[in-house]
Image 1 (cartoon, one colour):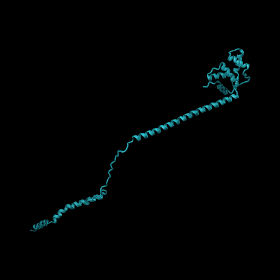
Image 2 (cartoon, rainbow, N blue to C red):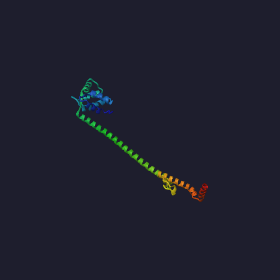
Image 3 (tube, one colour):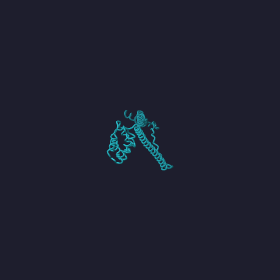
Image 4 (cartoon, rainbow, N blue to C red):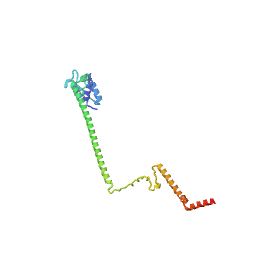
Length: 235
């Protein structure tokens, strides 16, 4: 909290459009700043107060009335006249002068501009810090990438390399549709044709088996047996 009693005195006078007594102003200042306004400090403040606040019959610097204030506050001469003069001054209502109002408004603008500048400076410092860390992180990542590249280039196997040849997959070959042996040719892709060929082969086998009896029946021995049989039947 600011302890400048003059800035706070202008603030209090600016906020009291209907005026304020010096006694009340002093009380508020001491509560706001926690500063005791007594003795020489108060006398110096009164001289500033007379220049910046206005009221009818304001005392003039160096006048007899100011000497009485000085006697009360500095010399501690608290006779009746001095105390009465100080009491009259303290209980009168005062208003902030126009030039003082302007000074106070200029002060507020300057204060606001200073606060904004401080905020901008903090933001700028923060942005610079973020940019610095971003550059540092980028540099670290780039360095890490270079190190990893070098590491893998060093640890990679050198030629000649071990070559592993995979076995060629066995290619399925379709069975021959027709066998070279005409008697046992078959067509596995056609069930009906295969069944027909089996029947033909079976008939061939049966004919081969019947060939021997036919040869026997055509032989001379069989002819002799027939003749003998006929003669025996006639006789």
